[in-house]
Length: 262
Image (spheres, rainbow, N blue to C red):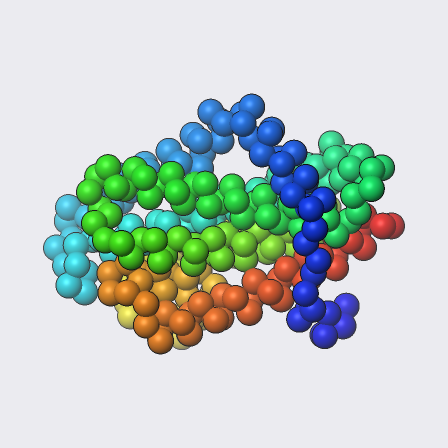
């Protein structure tokens, strides 16, 4: 793959929406199981960490612990749901169910399949974000219009991790292969990206490593947007996420297209 290919613009067509619709129809049939995972699990974290642990923490930079933790929970929900749909879900359709091979018997090609699957994984992650936001609103954690500004940013994060998930799907040999990406990338990001405690509490060397994680920039942008509004600092974080999403999207298109056309 050439460097210039990482900055090209993949084509999204109407056929990609048909792939997305196929996934959405299946989602509607299994929505009970999906809702339990993509919404209820983060809500349990909200109660156990936000309210439970938060009862012992009085001040987090001028805000309560639940106010500090909630924006990070939105980001980790976006990351987890989109990534796991992009890995386990897509790998199953690629190898065991042979869904992609069947779709290619129609006029829909590899690029439309990849575009539809990336859009679907991002959409499923965003469904989880919206569900957690709704529940948080019931608890009175949302009292500002700024959440409306944060939602498009969260969708960008969902899109980024759907692309990262698809890249790992393209190189996986079996389901066990995802243990490396989950334990070596996703779990460390969920712990060290300013989610449960400020980055300033990390040793200086580890703090620099944390800034290599896209989730760190997402948490910083969403937290500042919800509590203070959009600023140049937020714009800088979003630019990093946008560039990362664009590059990862092109890599995902390239690798899955090669895999499907072998």
